Image (tube, rainbow, N blue to C red):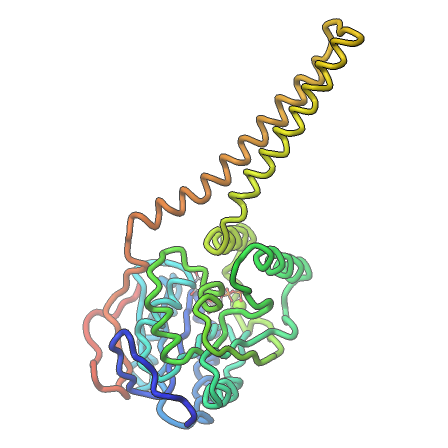
Length: 337
Ligand code: UDP
Ligand code: MG
């Protein structure tokens, strides 16, 4: 093992080699096949593994299925949220519950093939602390989704101070140190792709072909994706605030020039009362710019308001820990939504 002794800065002593974290929201159709393929893939990983399923307030039988898996498979730990908090929150919960020397985040819908996990572990053994999985192709996704995703990465990379790798989703491996670093970030606005880039550490990238969803439907509608993109941009850049300033300055400068032009014209050739069109155009333009700038301010202010309430990121029923670790045994209610 080429890993140096990590500084465990949040006091977690690893009890197994690898934690696999799986956020699941209404995934009853795909869960059984997913678990089967995952367990088969984990056989290729040297050392003990645990699988942490985070049920993100599913309204179908996901929670029951996970409860059953926990009873029959000692690798399985299950956390159930009290409602749908979102994938970023589910991944954050998984990272806090993970007891492995490394953790892998993977979607439940088999778009990220579990068979790649041994290669990720290998890359970690060779010294990487974060193993990013880059999609060479995206199966089963519309041209529009691919184009908007591409545009999003371009915009955010222009604006953000830390480069966010394009086409790298949430499928990745983090070393214990990287997990501890993630767990120390206090913010509520959790744009995970940005946070993973922000923590730094030795990162490496493996390319793979992304499959289409095995069953069920995507939970990301375009409005949700748009809000997700806004979250990403506002949590990693203050550039839009500056844009408002510069656009304001430019328009003020333009107005000055225009004013001088009119002054000059009136003094030289005189000006009978005309100019209503110019007036209305200028009023609308300036009004629009002001509204836009206020809107940008509002986006940031709203997020500051949410952060300032300091609510917990998520609420969940008791964690049913995997029994391989036999440190904590399963307790409490079986959290079905
Ligand atoms: N997911 C979640 N909470 C949500 C939405 C999604 O935990 O509110 C999970 C979902 O169960 C899946 C993963 O996040 O394991 C990716 O979701 P999905 O496949 O719907 O997204 P896409 O691949 O279309 O981006
Ligand atoms: Mg998916």
